[in-house]
Image (tube, rainbow, N blue to C red; front, top):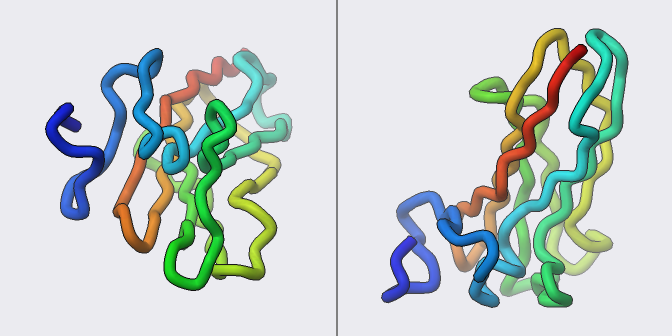
Length: 127
């Protein structure tokens, strides 16, 4: 994503400098919370939340909302959670995941006005 634009409707939006996010990114990128190390074939909790970085929350109104969050382990989709405008209470999901081998967790979210966003990857090591 270049400094000349805040977002793209046709390309994946993924910040390059995670230490210096613009407000557009702070309210659109999904954030993954997961342990760094887990045991093979044992469930662990993953939380994915969209936005809220530095208190910059994404709107949840009929004309502007997050439609869904997807979570991946590498290229393999784990889940997709859909949200409805106005009636969803924020954009967060908590789920149990089981991995057989170490993986990179990746989350994506879709805003009806500002397109597809990808958050910072989270490495999970399976012991």
